[in-house]
Length: 255
Ligand code: NDP
Picture (cartoon, rainbow, N blue to C red):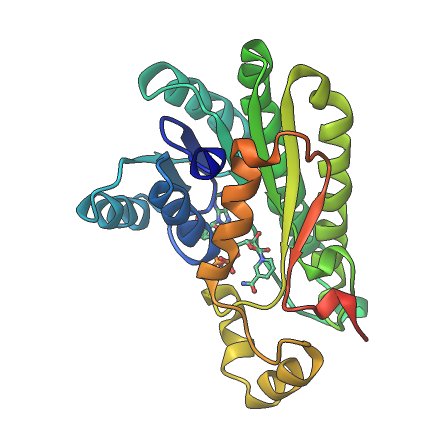
């Protein structure tokens, strides 16, 4: 049956950084395809209201408030979810931060924050969840990269370095964990209108540049990331491993 290939019925997904933006859209998308979802972020009130929105829409949603840079908290909450809610079948490492400044003036503490959140956070949540998945011989991990996994832009060199690291962390997770029945892949979004990009969305010159630079001629809508996530979270991708899927309107395909 074509549909069962993409069904997430009976699966439990943990999506980090899912109180808003891409993370929330992906969590909702997985729920629409049958998954129960655990929403995560640092702000309990934001996560609570995001959970309420999904429950009000008839989906199964739970809250998990931890900071991905607090490794003890990650371990503790992953253990709690496994014990109290159920086995985590799908992890989306989505929590991420951005900071823009010329590289020669880039503040050291922002470099550290970007790497700790975007790279170490994904490594640690990946490790904490994978240990459970390995004992079950199955599991799906989706890391969120970016077109900056491939391409640089002025003022965001450290972010670019973190997203390049995500592409290779994805390959490394595959190299270590595929043999245990896990599939680890990445989604690399192009430019989507979210709070992270608010400064760019509000800048007409940037929007005009983006529309010219992107073969599809526009910003992406977050709902357009759901298909890739459902594919990589479902049985449909059972032999896809270590891959980075660009969802970018063709930006990385052209100069
Ligand atoms: P937002 O800033 O809108 O959302 C980021 C989310 O991450 C927030 O919900 C935030 O919640 C959470 N978060 C941040 N730090 C932490 C942390 N330490 N622990 C737990 N949660 C955290 O960003 P987007 O939705 O735009 O981006 C989501 C992902 O997609 C990021 O990895 C980003 O790099 C990537 N991306 C985005 C693109 C875009 O066009 N928007 C393009 C390419 C990639 P809280 O502050 O409440 O903790």
